[in-house]
Length: 290
Length: 290
Image (cartoon, rainbow over all chains, first blue to last red; front, side, top):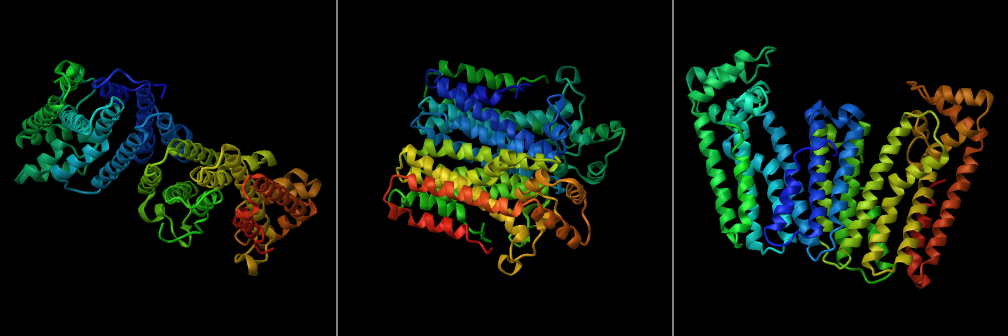
């Protein structure tokens, strides 16, 4: 935990609380629970992905072995529930129900992601569903848990949840886009990482569905190669992405989810001024370097 | 879940409830939470131990692979909390706190067990501590959670917890004993499984501490061998167990923990007749075939 990360999820808990009421000290316990849960998923995902690095440091399983990392992840999940149990609050049960639902969905998203690795063709709908489960519901759940502590009614809670969920999907579309078309100077890494790893992304899925003739064959060919020097592969695949219009499609898809997110935010029944910070956050997340 | 097991832990939840009050429907949700938690530990332990079989069937990781088994275990743990969250009860928080503490301790016990595999010499105290964490606290916690639902006061809860914890340790001492000295006809399996696997047990630890001269060398030798035909090894190690008095020591250690368990049971402030079933259960568990 001490090596950082952006702490976006715990911040969302606090913002969800403050949208409706003064910051309640119990939001801090829930924020910690959420960040611990997020770290639990990272520890276990890194085992499954055999990832050597996380946040620039060796992963837990690299340092301590798979078994200890597995157990460490289990304990971090229990620690998340320990934080949650600190909430002396009439709403402990609603928080626990939402936390459990979210936790289960995140695991289901990870399983879908692994299943997709074995599939040649993935549909946009199921990929979006996977992204929603694996990443967006935790952002959405963080906001809603904050809203519960802030005393929000169920309708407002649900709009805030949908704001987070749609924003999360928009962010992932943008992430997939920037990995290929981002400015390496601004984006801070070389483009094409997802192409090198043959990852399913919004772009890849659109291109697979819309490429024809030669492009389709070329794309299929490259999606099965792991060349040592990937420059040629990145160029070829990026060209096909452009020719199938995957870049423009992704930009408009992102806008669509971003707009839906903002609509849900606007529908929440609190004075507009209170929503400034969430609007700013959404805008900030959607302005990433491109 | 459907392939069974003895369901001892959920039964303990119900018995803990019924020691103090009529069976409360919420005890069923907690009983399910406990059984789900137990199954979560089995799925993850089987990954760590690379175990091919559990309850006579192929283990989850053997059928679906390590990653899916890891995730399945995670989801089963979340499902345990989903059951717990069903409790509409002023005591949801106490139940959650005890469940979390127990869950964390069980994980710590599993880590100690793995650490011991790397050590030549383990002390009786730390082995007992490991057994308490890995197996006894869940039995104890099951009883106490039932007691909480039954409306027991804290003192009575703690005595019931200690009853379960001491009984669990006594049971494990007996288990280690029977693995070597049990009657194969009554015990249903060939003796010496722990010796073959070079497992630390109460007997092995006592013998390592008390063997001298030739016996010490022989024991050290065999504890590093994995012979294909283990009959000679089993005979040699069993002889050393006898010569160091490990068998008599284990029998008396078991009696000691069993007596402590019963003392805690007697101290609980409910009419003696209510304790019959728990006394019978303890007696039944301590009468296993030897």
